[in-house]
Length: 280
Ligand code: ZN
Image 1 (cartoon, rainbow, N blue to C red):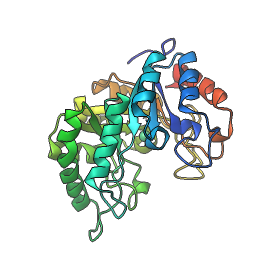
Image 2 (image 1 turned 120 degrees about the vertical axis):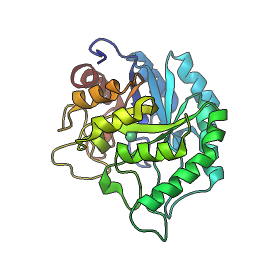
Image 3 (image 1 turned 120 degrees about the horizontal axis):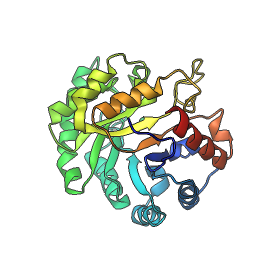
């Protein structure tokens, strides 16, 4: 297992941690200010959300690299299945944005159960067909598609993938080298079969997302914990991810309307760095 006690290049900020994925939250730092603050602290990378990028993908990507870091991911495609699914052209536009940023990972949160179906298996098959239809387009642009399973409580309207095993099954159906999984502590911490699923994913783990599960969580979407403040076994999860072969970035992604989004972003980044060194 990698030792991060004195080494930060593997640490990446997902800007959601500063409240940047939802209107009305966070301190409103520009991408440039976020880039400078991360570079000052020695981070290796940043993950942005589409809403922050607009038409500036190339410019922001170059700015990150000029600061000595990488854009290690983009969140995320529009929904691909479910009643809120968007068109293949919208999916392709998000792939183009990732390519413009110069990142090789685009995360997929699938969207919910397909209208007219029950359960998740049929929706997973439709998801597989729709991901397969854009996988070549993404490969031509050097972009990997990372299917992110969500905690089962997000089934219905946000996801049809509730576990890494679900995501690996869809990857197997698609059968493309650039279609893999993203592993987020918040969504997988409960899964006692996680290590086996990760072993099956092997070199198709394209992302690892850090946070914690608070013992008494008060909001299923917006009350994630800082690493070390909750009950997820962070070291065991990372060991399983790395045993499967993952050597990429560890991306801190904390949605926290009542706590971390109310703090100064500089403080959030400082605590994040300290926790990454000591409890992850
Ligand atoms: Zn995530």
